[in-house]
Image (cartoon, rainbow, N blue to C red):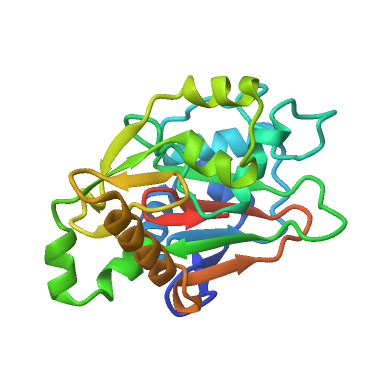
Amino acid sequence: MSLQSIALTPRIGSEIQADPQVLLSGSQAAEIRRLLEERGVVTFRKLDFDDQQQLAFARTLGDIIPQGNKGIYKVTLDKRENDRADYLRGAFYWHIDGTTDDVPTRASLLSAKRLSPSGGQTEFANTYAAYDDLPESEKKSLAKLRVVHHVEAIQRVMYPNPTPEQEASWKRHPPKSHPLVWTHRSGRKSLVLGSTATHIEGMDVTAGRKLLDELQAWATQPAFVYRHEWTLGDMLIWDNTGTMHR
């Protein structure tokens, strides 16, 4: 059985319509991975997978990095349910998960188990497409640049006057350097941006900040962005190495 997919915008996002058992069988895993890199974001409306089904489906796509409780991290700002709710507020700003790791997560899955009474939408920006549309001269000038990323950068946006405990927590994560332009195994290239970016190595700090801000504005223009309006039971996957989200 082949997958049925619908483009959600011209440059990013596709909705897949498939039988849940077909998804769990793994028979379409290669096609989903291909579509994920091509479109950045893949959605499944009202799939209603439970936690174990979500994990089983994820295993068909690749190795799992365990998160949170029993392999799944609960995304909520309710401090009664997540003791890192304050930290999660940084997610309101554009970012790529794992830029402070040696190797960021390839992709992430998010399911809607309970909806916020207001807001709660998730936005994604396709940094493959943003790179593709840059002028060739600019691509050449960016090719060898490296950017330093740090947890503190995105947290200071939310908490400009942090407590000593907050600062100590942030500094437990060492900064990491990544290429500004990632070259993927497929040969495609994407921009590595986000609010964790602190500076460009070897460049004047002010000039580097200006370049990062300009690229971020370019990559998050409406043509490259998909905004997901959640309904209960939705599941969504994004290519974390070729999209930003918030």
